[in-house]
Length: 375
Image 1: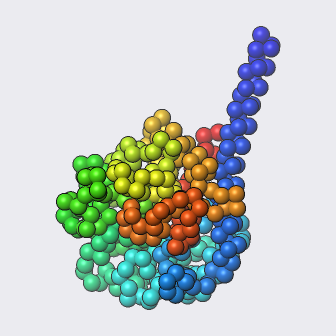
Image 2: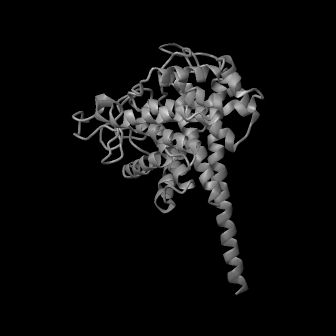
Image 3: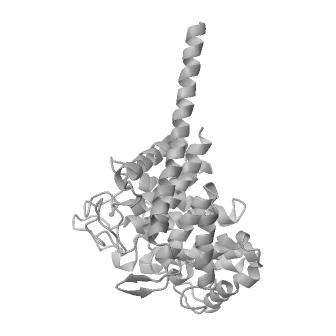
């Protein structure tokens, strides 16, 4: 009996040690990928030079900082905050291209400005003046039809939710939800397919548009953007908000849709239900891992169903995509459809390296939280 008890204890301790090792491996992998980027792009104020000069508060870099702040939440390091603060200060806490823009891509940087507020020692009104003026300007137009492509939902809607929480003024979240509903139900006849939970990227991809194999075109990263936006908004407004259950309903249906098309290797194709451009792809896969891990942690998704999906996704991201030096392979370049940036391979370098890392950090850090809580 004593021998059997000791064996059981040993097995339990071994299992605990393996879980702890796995959890630390997730964090170490996220650190490695981020360290590679911060070393390569050591000056956060430097513009990007992809075909033309773009200021470093463009949407691709803004998404990276979303991921960096998520990493800092589980791996607090002053160097992360300094890197992000230098970036925000250089851009004077302003939307890209000024306060009169209505393009969500130019507004995305504001999400990180808000996340940086606790580290500044300054008042919200002082640092967010330009962001608030920008959103007020857009609201004043009386239009809700600016988000004509689904990527914009992630770039813009969480910012409106965050400004609502900072100011307490519900006009911001009301405007965001009306804009979301316009994209969902009106744009191009409705970019959300209510029958199956997938999203068309914009009006050019709704039926009768078909992929070469005759199937609908649901672009992985585009659908991932919406998924991430719902997470970030629900997390911000909280369960008691009147809009929470509305977004939760879409989130659950989307989760079912994404679960149905995971590749056997754990990743997702660039085209979710089509054979067009079949192959491993990191950005959409990372965003699906982000959403599903968050959904399990918050009691929205059943762990029995979704935890194995997350485990497979993480193992594939770690083993198939992350190079020894932290470079991320299988990252699709910028674009709006499965054909963009092809071929997407283990060694191909995307036109921008920042947003892919941002997606990866969101997914890996949320999965890290999930594994940490499962000990």
